Amino acid sequence: MGKFIKICLSGCLIFALCFVSVPAFGKGQVMTRVKVIHASTGQNYLDPGLRDIISELETVFKYTSYKLLKEKNLNQSFNRQSRVNLPGKRTLVIMPLDTNDNRIRYQINILKNKNSVFQTRILLRNNSSITIGGPKFNNGYLLFNIAGAVQ
Image (cartoon, rainbow, N blue to C red):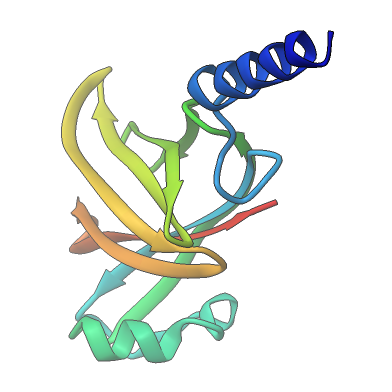
């Protein structure tokens, strides 16, 4: 009887290891924050809503004006898309794919008239942010600051 229980427990363990997928950080919810920024070389302006990332922006980009257009907090599940409406009849589609080595991998698409005009994947360290450049808009460019934290 003891041997039978050991075989059953071993079988259950093998099943769990092979067929049950659990994200590396636990529950599998990702808190994502997207800041949509208009950057230009116009008159000097630094939006107070960008205070926490302005040093990153000024180090990476060479614009003189940064205006926060929109900020959206998303409570996401892995492999589930969320959408953020953008100026210029565009939509940002963002989806956390998985985690690996304390990093979150995101798929990012920008749609215009329901057609994809930009696609990329980013690998973001958990509890950090990154800013990526986007399309031209109103004598400047759209930038996207994406922050993620696995809960």
